[in-house]
Image 1 (cartoon, rainbow, N blue to C red):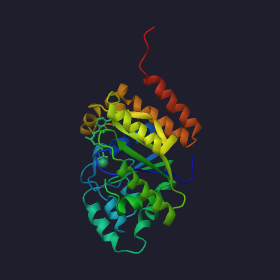
Image 2: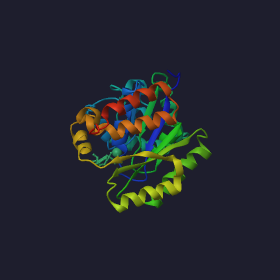
Image 3: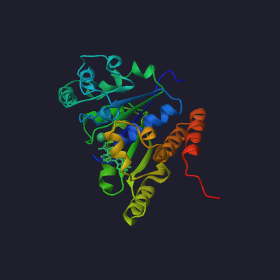
Image 4: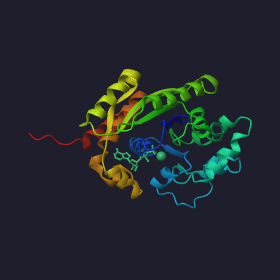
Length: 269
Ligand SMILES: Nc1ncnc2c1ncn2[C@@H]1O[C@H](COP(=O)(O)OP(=O)(O)O)[C@@H](O)[C@H]1O
Ligand SMILES: [Mg+2]
């Protein structure tokens, strides 16, 4: 559709905020909406790779790509560039190199010509890998967990986005802020949503991803939520539609909206 994929980094201020689940589910939503979607695991924990069911011994991975030993095109398994603990080593190696923040951006140049969308799952730290992801991206999505939200953490993430934009990637922009893993029956979650809206205005997605046990279950089963428990995919179908709207992808948005219509609970008449 495009000649170069639109690239989105999914980040947060810390671990456990639902980033990997968001990346997995959004990748599924977008490909169901008709976009060729590449998911990139930039976390040495490799949770995204596992969630996609990429074999643990898949080779090469993002680690070898960032170390300059392999081409990114060869590291695509299915539609995933996986990661494992070797990525932590690659990050250390990278730290001493000139252009260390630009390595992922250069590596993805070729894959980006074969996809419409690249989604990058960032590690839980705001270090060199996250900076590489931001420099390689057009957009950032910030995931905030309702229960353990910290304003300070969100500000730190925004600072890193700001630094990446000012120094290395002037095209980077915030696509949106997501309230994730939320139980809106609690006062705390509602207060967190208000805090986010005060700070980020309409950058906050209208969709809130509700807390549900089906997410860890679907990760365990290495199956996306759309297949694991179709009815429960409504939140991520809505989020997909919102993201496509913000990206102004009209035909794909229509498909995502159809998907939302199919998944919406039927009203009793
Ligand atoms: N909406 C949700 N409701 C309940 N649990 C969730 C939800 N989204 C993610 N989880 C679970 O929370 C944990 C952390 O999520 P994960 O996506 O791995 O976050 P991160 O990548 O930010 O560390 C995982 O066990 C995951 O299955
Ligand atoms: Mg993760």
